[in-house]
Image (cartoon, rainbow over all chains, first blue to last red; front, side):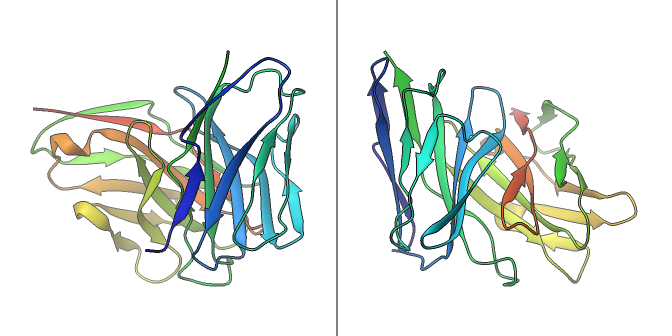
Length: 115
Length: 112
């Protein structure tokens, strides 16, 4: 089955720790995205990548970092510089806009909690 | 800059009645518009999209949406609501910069 896999589903972080959220897709999509969702709020874009070895900051990139060394993988690191990291994190992928069959496919999310 | 508005935080409707969830957008050029649904602690599921063609788009689970260019709207509709339709609904636009911009979401409650 093709899809996006996020792991872990739940993650606990101590103050001052860096943690990495995994996102893997086998849809052969060039574009991948990370969004943050807070309770009762919409999705805010953290980073996105249109192609391997390239990525752009979204609206709330501070305190986060990403890499895109492989087409299938787009891990997100939440650094200690992120002051309020407790949230639900969603990864997505898509075909390019030029493709009329494009849509965003989402993983099941990772819930990160600072303890 | 692209933006999406969903003017209602919450929509309540009785089971069996028609439902509408509103969305307006602001984009330059031709809009690529999408509706997604989210159940608790889950990712977003695709419902339908408008790229080009017929202004009335039919999607999953009996949902449809009408693209209105003059009103810059893309309202989601369903003729007869089910209790199982209760969820969080997001409207989105795909920008020329190749990222999806989402509205704030509308919580739909279908009352039995």
